Length: 273
Length: 270
Image 1 (cartoon, each protein chain N blue to C red):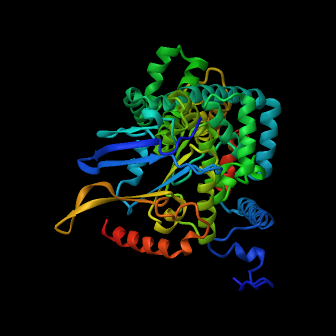
Image 2 (image 1 turned 45 degrees about the vertical axis):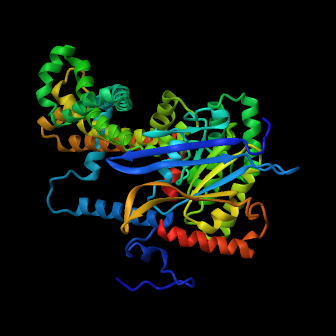
Image 3 (image 1 turned 30 degrees about the vertical axis):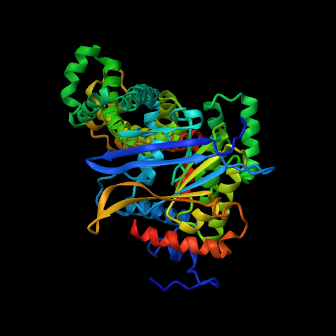
């Protein structure tokens, strides 16, 4: 690596900072670094001697075929509907359970629910099928279970970690306990709830192919990918993986925007740190 | 409310507390009386001096109604028992609701106190002017400097119509300029009303002497060179009686310096 030339201010030039430890890059430099890695990955992809991966062009063509002839659009919509339903129920169940930990009576229950995250989904298919009758409801329950057990664990921890001084602060203002719960527990941890949700939606999205594979009744992108996999249609499989990746990133970005809109103070706090 | 010279505004009587088997407070007693000066609005500032870990914050928590003493009583004006929420408390780390702006933090305090919306807005505006926070009205706590945060926390506590304000170590970790500002802010807040009373807990002897009309020293007894658990008020200094209160530049006077030396010497033994 050539030695970085110092600028007039004594600081090394932008791109050289990327090779120095613990430095913060400007937006432009960060964009250049990202572009480098994207290009490098593409070159590596095309130039690899092992043909385990279809070429980008093959995947692009497969994507077109999937979209226009195999109903990728409606399947994607089905999957998005599933993740949206599961996310809704996850939020309701997890936040309710997390906030209710302010009442000591419910703490063992929430602790117990949190421990259920170590159960695999596969073993739960049978009891959940009996409970829901299978189909779409089964998938929603499975996905909600998979997401909520992790969400409850993280959120209950966030609630437990609220410093006592925050409660005392509200008490000396004369606030009642219900208002304290609203201000300190609910509103005070909203940014953390959004962060947890963001992580759990990502986890749910990663589980989606498995859940849709367990019950293929209504199709969905997970069922589609398993079908393509069965027929060794590698280009189609990777096209679907690409869609899953892009949609996942889009959802993650949307959750980030939602967090900034709902809790602008959280972003400021991070900048301040 | 009218101010009557010598009237007892706070009566702390034989307050004791034991935590985890260790005696923290052992019969703390002191009174705060109404100080009156002709034609000058004069609130009360009382300093509780004591070394770290002696139980000063514990005592403040009891005064604020956050913790109950094992024994003893805390009564306000007219012998009224002080309930949680009836006493302002500025904590050492200046907690504010981080999801609310400066204005919103103040207005919340007003709403909790049951103030009318128009009065809440008016009082918040006035306090933001007084505490030089008007330009930061829409800022979140994360955007404030340490000094602004402290002022916002104090303003939030006096947003409500309460006359007893407790401040936990408001002078610690400040540079000399900031220390002078906070010291004058304490006096300013106290002097907003004749019945305003501020109890400042600190281990900064000089600043405590400058701002207060009474200094109480909280300490533990020693037996055979060993500390006996349980703090109590070991010494009290009436700065008004000594002619050392309410005087600009009092810290330059010989009397002040002598008393400071005396208190410092006793502080070493606490």
